[in-house]
Image (cartoon, rainbow, N blue to C red; front, side):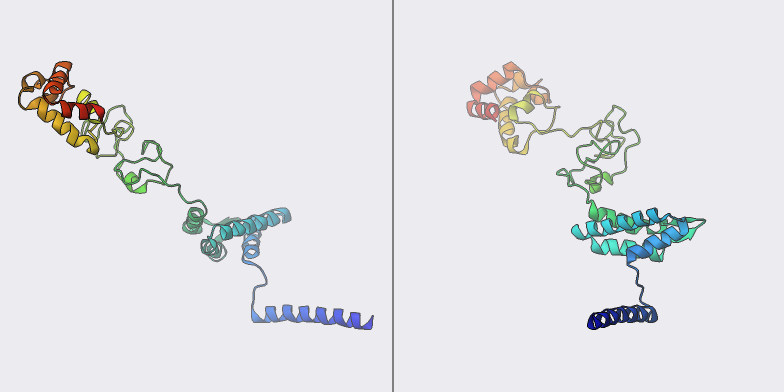
Length: 249
């Protein structure tokens, strides 16, 4: 029993000495989370329950940051909250730490990726973009100044009225998909011919607009309008390989 009492006494003496050393050395016995919650609650006059809730929230945030490899951002934010935020008229003003909070938020919840970045069109949600990608995922394209008349039902980009920059009125000027050879011949205003189909269409067009078929194709295919049956039949007769390749594209 004597040895047990002596051991207990030595333990208490050691703890007391450690506490005294920490106090004398100026070491803060509080964790950063406790320090923040104490400062905040001293200002806001929290209840004990609110103080405990504050500490739980901060510890959970610390664990979340560690799991997401955001410990540096969390530490920087918490340091700002304890060193730079201040009590003002009974409210703990944390607005000075907005940038640090944003950095932590971006680290914890990075913007989703967009497979349409740098295509010249803002693909983030309306009214800025066409909504094909999430907010914050197409920043380069969405840096284009928004067209003042965007979303009014009329295309105001260069292919329309020309009043606004390319990519600034995506709702009214949806991106046009490219077309295969014969689809383009039938509807040249519905979208450009695909790069892979360009040589096929050139051969088809050359046959229709130069030589024997020029007379029947002049007012349709050769003038940029939809090809008609008489023109297409002529190309089939005099340029069978070009006609077959274009139709099969």
